[in-house]
Image (cartoon, rainbow, N blue to C red; front, side, top):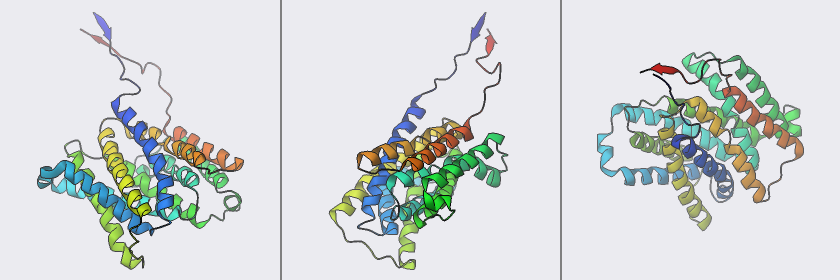
Amino acid sequence: MKTHASPPPALGLPELALIAITFIWGGTFLVVQHAVTVSGPLAFVAARFAVAAAIGALICRGQLRQLSRAELFTGMAIGVSIFGGYALQTYGLMHISSSKSAFITAFYVPIVPLVQWLVFKQRPHPAVWVAVALAFVGLLLLTGTDGLSMAFGTGELITAVGAIAIALEIILISRVSPQLNILRVTIVQLATASLIALLLMPVMGEAPPALSQTFILSVLALGCASALIQYVMNWAQKRISATKATLIYAGEPVWAGVIGRIAGERLPALAIVGAILIIAAGILSEWRPKRRGGAAKAVQQ
């Protein structure tokens, strides 16, 4: 008797969870932009991830005693990349709008296959090169006349570099061993990002911020959001491919753009075209044509 294996659902629980956190992630850009008006970027990153790590530790409690060396070093490696991505993104938001920051950050999507090639020797598909070129054109259009003259502003340049760190974070998360405890790894990575920011404050000459209502509420809100985002990313990427996860993440700047527009931000027409090109590049970089006969296989019983 021949039966046909059912293909896995296109939108299972991991996919739906990632879609949910991309919406939350998109909303954080606007909150960060308001927060850096009352706090230095490093202080905000340190406080944000300290709250997130504390939430994870409260949930985990006794489990931290079982922290293994592999979980410690894996969490620290991801934490370094998280710090790089979020710290540079926060610096950038001092100079550019939250919508523009989100779309430039989306540049990490086509960068992911290139970083995998450089770090793990995984040769990218030819479509990736087209996607990177498309994303770069989109980046030029998004930054306006400065971009077209190849003179990127401070905010745009810092945010674009931060996108590379986020690409590395996505790759590292996708390579977390199934044997590792996700909650413990998440706590370590959040604590690492917070500690690095805290240690760099005196080096960069950044003073502690005043404990204003804006700062406290922003830190608490984004601390909770960061804990949820990082845990769900770690959990979901153990269950679906990095390719599918990256495609879902490509929707994050769309949410940020919608939320920014509701808040009164307006991107010029040329910038909107650039944003669309960056999103299209992200989809193209992960798209692969299905081979014939690659559908469900018949099995003998």
